[in-house]
Image (cartoon, rainbow, N blue to C red):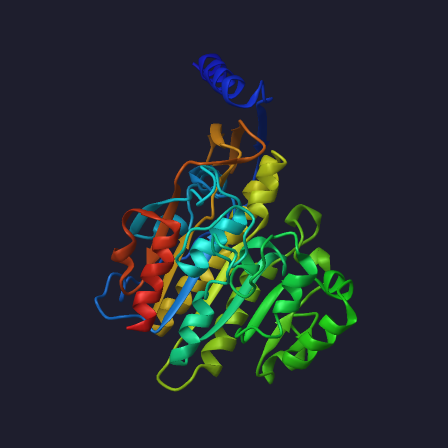
Length: 377
């Protein structure tokens, strides 16, 4: 049966990708990290949430999620959630999207062309969720393990014609409406034009550590740690993502306007990057780290009672399928059939008030439209 599966996979990849090499990977003896089991007290409630946390696992289809579940001894916060759906990710220009076009769809509610950051098909700026909700006093933040100019975080504050316009994207931050950001990196920041650095430092209290005392008193906070702290887990990153997620939640919750709420986007960026490299063990570790960030968001939703958490992906990367495993030992094996993005729909999970609105199949732009409808009513 295994030989037959490999033959079918090889035939499919040869037909679609010009004899792309199938790459197997394995991870063994992963220590169980547990998962968070929600209270479900407000899950599916009919009242509108005041806060929305949108979590995007870059490049993550069902393959990495399932791999994380089995590597974590058959347990995952993802799989403790009851409301689930699917998201189609096609862009306005391509059947297979890139992160910029999909990020823009998630941030604005409009489809656009591959490469666009917050711009429509005519290369005009589209108001993003933070810009829309600030009009009603709702504040926003962004967290990512990518660089701040990465396509997904950039889509929530910048407006540029191409994702590669790095200096221009950074230069959009001082004029953004964000109250909080945490992403890579100190080194990237220091390579930007001096005028951009000064403008960001004037608009935000900029620190290089989540533990900096200034985090407690800042009114607008930017966290730009050394690159290793937002890089791959296999290269030394520790718990930056779950810690930054919780810090962002607490920061925004403490500074939100009376009677109003907040919007937060959290990206686990390096699942995608590991899948591009067909690095199966790294992809699994990144997924498990993202699951810990999910746990922080769901814990807050239970504590707060007025928060909706939506978890999905901008696209699938590498066509990852599972090959074998032993959940009792934290062992799992997978097969990557591509080094690029694929057009297959990605899973969506939701928790909290109106989580039921996200069931079924929907476009990535519809996810944003639903979030805006809930926050702006």
